[in-house]
Length: 344
Length: 280
Image 1 (cartoon, each protein chain N blue to C red):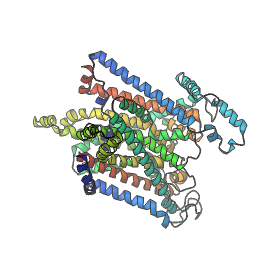
Image 2 (cartoon, rainbow over the protein chains, first blue to last red):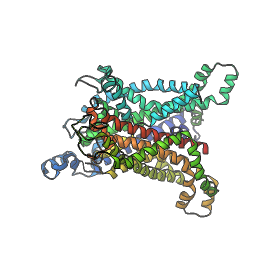
Image 3 (cartoon, rainbow over the protein chains, first blue to last red):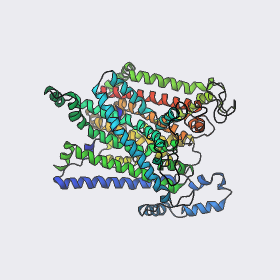
Image 4 (cartoon, rainbow over the protein chains, first blue to last red):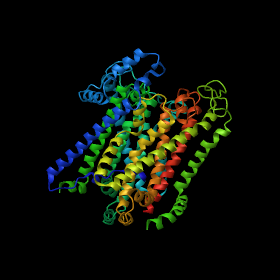
């Protein structure tokens, strides 16, 4: 239930109407919301830069014990990071590069950052979208079954299982799946994703099963629990009672009256979870050696490869902000009371 | 009015909580795991870094790990670090988050707008990412660094909840009355607002503890633990992963401990959340 409480209310973001009507009010709201997203993204870039460069000493972290014995390498790395310039100048230099599509050069292998990232962005995108495509119908299906048996035994069992799953970290679920399906009990699925340098992970569909299943199991409980809570709220309401009294069969009540009303909270929680997936892939990709940006991020953090970490975390944060923006716009469009609140 | 209702409500809240199945089961198992993490090191058959046989051999109850250390002993030693860091990180996150949220709600207007916008910036980072970004420029992070990082990643999420709860309280009569009497702002917050938020905040703390355990274990799993030599459930998974096919217990034992711990704390948090919701 606590997850329900943390869902943002789309109405909260609605600016009070001030004399504008219809389309104009809409445009103002939309521009304001997009402007806020861009402002957030800019502040995120400041935070990423400060966190990676100013909180610690990247050169010292890269060289480790060699720091004192190898002044030539120190000077070389500091030159590459432009350590002689001020923090603000370096930040704007980096930001300019980011905006023009040149996020710099990797410290680990001296290759341009973007060239190493671009293929992995696609791989991660496919993984996340596949997980979402399986998760959304599954979560709604479980929620409908659970709501059908509301407050009876099957519902309690389903809810307890979902609650249990919701707490378990995703890599724990992943390892249990690996132990179950690829090493200890059965030997039916590969435990790691094997990719040729030119190929894609989905060339071998069997290797995709466990990563996708792990993500689905990690996310479905949240979505399903919130959709069920909304369904129950609607099923107990007066207008659904009226529909039943009119003699409309229960399956139609569920589909037409209850499910449609659960879509908006559903979209919000799906957006939250998709945004979460952008970070959740970090662990799952590392576990399955999946060639995506999550695993690349972990490797770059291990190598203290500052430009790579900066670019990858900006991508993940940008996805997070974009998904939230789209979800906000969709929920306003689909909620009549919020729609009229804006355009009155 | 707040003083008379909140002080006798505290013992009855616990009694009501114990009657609830989810809280009592979750809380009971959590207590067992905590006791295990604290006291098991005293009963471990071997030392933390004591070699008892060849790597990945079946010697001992749960076999040996990648260095030939006794897995059962490592599991018994490995809970303490996860527990302490998770609990402290949860406390840091709750204190920071409540402070931000309550100040935003109580300050209102511009304060609220600016604080919550900055909060949104931190929210744009998935929790584990915030820790990873900072760890880029550090070498062998100290335990307090991990505590602060995990705590900071909780703070914006706690702040959102705390602000929501506090917004419902700051406009109530007893707060207005205390302000009218000329109480200091800090005193109004500490004596009038906070005591009326305990229910939802306890539930949030339980949820945050669940996530703390997950993130701390995950950082260990990714190889960013504070002390590479010490036993740590998250790190044990990482160390012994390659032996999963030959000696599964070296990985499964810590995995199962983490799973039991997080399921229990999550059940407890959900029980608290239901109580807090009913109480209002």
